[in-house]
Image (cartoon, rainbow, N blue to C red; front, side, top):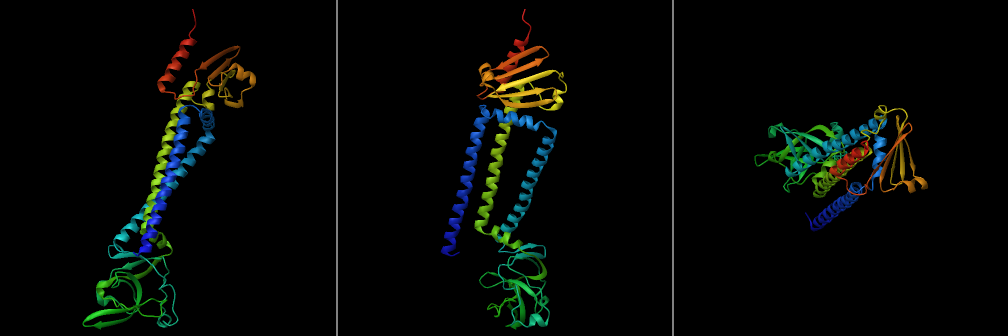
Length: 357
């Protein structure tokens, strides 16, 4: 590598790694803030709304489909990216050649075989139309012996500078008892200076190719590509890890809110078990939630009279059953609720509900 290439590589690596670190740090801070707000109750209204929304069957189906779609895209990315990256790294280790049995694959690095140069009249004379373009992925077949190669075969070989070349044989000569192949690219007007021997030959072109795919493999083969892919995978892993932390915290908080609400499931199935004339209202953080035997009815901002009657920092549950009204007040929930506290609150409520002598 030249000094310019080394400097460009270092600059690229620093830029990509820095970008990945900044993204993960910012996202971690964002999730940290969300976690704090979830645990101390500042997101309770949002979570309650989510619980009500997710209680609807059509929403449950939609959320399930969305979750499956997101997971599918994530795993499709991994299924595509990991083999590409593995193929590219292995290809780099093997100097651009991936051997599978007697076959191999190689990325075309130049356009020397992309078209027919008018000076190469043999291409037209013999109908040689097996050209390929830059970044095509071509397949090669291992050659059994030096006499198996014929004039006008397209071969891949390694020259005296250890560079892979894919050109057409235009002459076969014997020099000091050794067969040497004269090669030229179909798009070139000049013959290659180096004449490979059979020992230099990697394989013969089979005529099969996959267009464009090589551009991705070439990128993954580069140091910059490897660093970029690793950084992207790290970002995805880190973001997924932070999301799971937040999901666990939200589920814990929802579970505790459900216990405080004393509503096992905020969907219509639960309320079908209640009497038709039962009405529940829950006042919390400036909002009033109303439920009946069908389920959730409405959410409204508390009126000035209700704000005076009910402390907005407390959760107040008012249940009406005919002429009877039962009011339950929970202490401030604007802190980290533990499962132990939730259980104690429920026990205290049960004790208060016992008939007095």
